Image 1 (cartoon, rainbow, N blue to C red):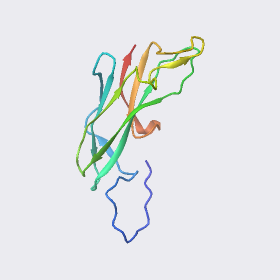
Image 2 (spheres, rainbow, N blue to C red):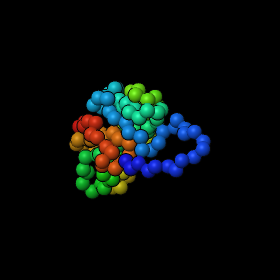
Image 3 (cartoon, rainbow, N blue to C red):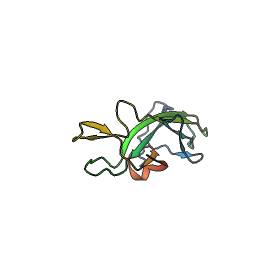
Image 4 (cartoon, helix red, strand yellow):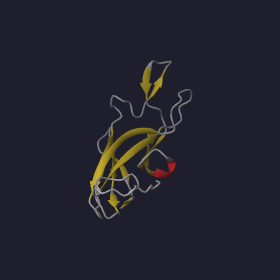
Length: 143
């Protein structure tokens, strides 16, 4: 992330998050099935700056290749906002429900006129944006 310095103003600075604040992962993120159909990803960021900050952590999935069914390289499947005091750590959970109405694991099969979940290995990514430098692999699962 790039840091741009704001011009000084007479008003005191807000404790709201700045886009340039740095958060680090306290421990490795973990993905696991929390029910037979839902995948839960737990994240543990900590706030390093000396002021209160907020961060929206995003979860993406890469679907396995499906011949004849084009798809984006990564798909946003969920997000969680964390408000952290200086030096504090927190936890948030993002749940992936394959049966949700936005079809997070499915691709549209035009020939069959229905949503299908491809067979293969799915990758779950966590980060603060979809940029490759801002993402870390949280886990994989196979269907």
